[in-house]
Length: 335
Image (cartoon, rainbow, N blue to C red; front, side, top):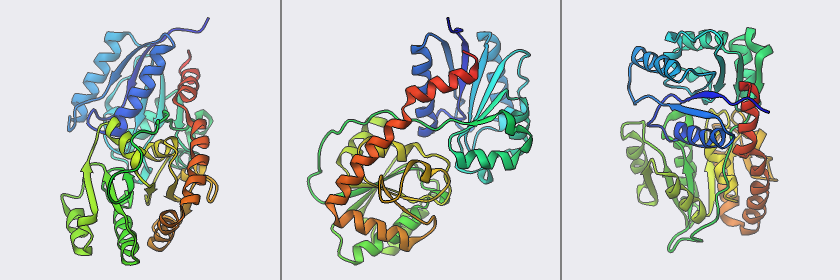
């Protein structure tokens, strides 16, 4: 009989949609397999000392056997202040887009040294971890991000079709590249709008950039949306674009594939591990406006290509089921 765990599952922020998706998906699977799970996700802006104290208190209150901590680029600095109890099994997962964006690298190194196992959500991320902290290579392994099926609902929208992006508006996500490529697409006569889902971290500068390009009236910035709203947009969009300069294994991309959508994505980080160019999506060099515009043009103009790539993307997405990923993590946690 497998061991039943008292497990603390931690993500850095209760306010980040990606963090919430990871916590919700894994907590549900861990509980379904009979484990007692508490989720730790501190309030936005909480001081590291406060967060570390709350985390340690929850470990003691639950008498946790194991902790599974997901580290994104921001919000993991509190780990350097935590004294993990003797005997606690700690699995640390590198989720962030790139370690160059990491806040508190010294604290992260200390947590890596304490962890019993370390995982990354892409092979690219695993290589990055090995270069960052060579001493952890023997206890490090790959466990991909996951996705749930996204049933098609809603069909094509009334009015102009649209391309969808999902992700925070920040430099590393490449939304400025998308704006330039989309402007070129419109200049070539494309009948297309763009819906961009995600919080704006530019202080409104991105909206001003769209106005300077003369395309603001063809772009809808929705801000962060709940999963059901994102699923609705995925069902109705013509295709999906992911223009990041830096990535690990983006859940938004996997979710678009799980919705059966053709995707245009950069060759950043672990993306080529999920998308085979010309077979399950179109890839272009990270940072290339020309390459992105060419991919957008092909997907906009060729309905047969969209259908073929969307079907292949859906098949590929089944390899990233949260059920499979949760079982692998539980092995590492000692269940």
